Figure 1: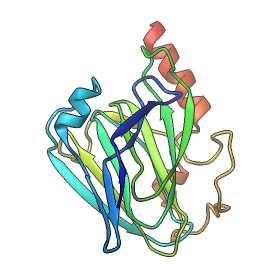
Figure 2: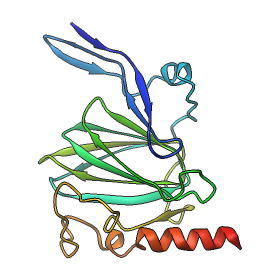
Figure 3: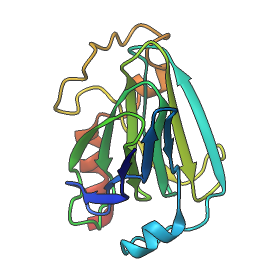
Length: 190
């Protein structure tokens, strides 16, 4: 039997945390804790109760995001693998404008603070991505979005911005991250 204990690692963005949940593996398979409040609290990380949990199934190469709603998210992959990307769009944060990436697979989670954009690219033929939100998503809710294109790194699988089966028109036409960061800086300075 193999036991992996709960662990957290702070990321390059203030408040972004990569989480290894407790996992127990034996000859029958693996049990992973999706969430245990007491483990987060013992690590000094408080999380409001989840109000909504979604599972997205995506094919290899699909990109979703970059969305920074006014909610905290706990993200993971239930099946397959994904490449997660995060942009700090909080003008008052010490890491405003910072970009980070995390390779996601079952047993790796990311806690994303409100105001930090998240997106991902599915790396396997079938990727089930789990979102736990501390607020219910609704159209028009407070937040920002930027295009997943032009973030200063290469996505593992080349993105065809003209392929709606790979990326939505809404995500392609969202503001470029540098333009959005400049606008948010100006708004905050005013």
